[in-house]
Length: 267
Image (cartoon, rainbow, N blue to C red; front, side):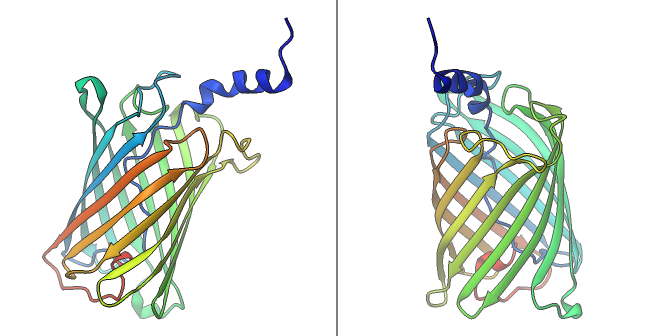
């Protein structure tokens, strides 16, 4: 029996299509750090209405609730360090600690008077085998943003490296994130967020294997001590969860109060 070209292609890609699992933090970073002597505690809640089935050595993400606790402390006006605890609540009563990451970040000081906000984040750590195809990873995240009146723009041209897992040996992977929002009044800033993973720089993956997500989201600035972001995330390719509701709630402690027209402009 002969198989068509497309049948052979899909069969060969099928294990890869099931690999993507990482939706523990869905956020486009702003350039500003939390500030000296300030501690930010955040809860990232991401629920997959439609996820991927189990396969390629990882669990199903269908109806998975990912709860990530992030604690970030500012040591100087331009240096912060964050620590993540990843957890999930999934089908069949599974409740598990999934892994942890450490994330130092430095920012170009405001005193430099650059025309755009600039910082760089390095996030490294592990997730338990069976919850993500990539176990030990490092994320290099340059961050560029700009507030233009009511319009806020952010670009995170992320580079992902894997030291243990499915992507080990593939080289640096390009995973850009983008954000656009528009301030309405003093509180609300609705917008659009894009999250991608295109594959190694030397040769991008086929489109069916790439990860592309688009979120309709809103930031709310009720109080400078608080952070709030929520939205609905559409998975545009088979290798990523197709339907996710995300929410971020954060609270600052200590330090000085920040003033901003868009809560997305500070973390």
